[in-house]
Length: 139
Image (cartoon, rainbow, N blue to C red; front, side):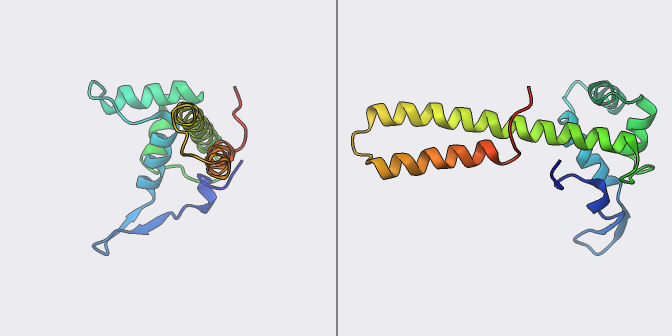
């Protein structure tokens, strides 16, 4: 797993732009958003956390504790599950973006006689880099 969302690399205390210190709970909140997606307009915090808990396979209480920064250590199973879900979503997002890019590239190549072979190869390399950004998709 990449180190992108590893809780052991996240600070337990952070400084915001005004210089005030706050607990690492906002980092854990970001982890939940990365794993389960943002709250919908129809969600309450509780329904969103319940959906996030169900998605990653932890209890509502554990999801709530992660959200409020009560548990944030790298050895916590709930945090690890949220990290894995965040990585999975990032990998899927990168793969989907690469697929869309290649589809648009195919349409462009068909209608664009002005592109030479080196330009097309460069665009295909961009799609490959997108696809490999988080490793292969794990469907």
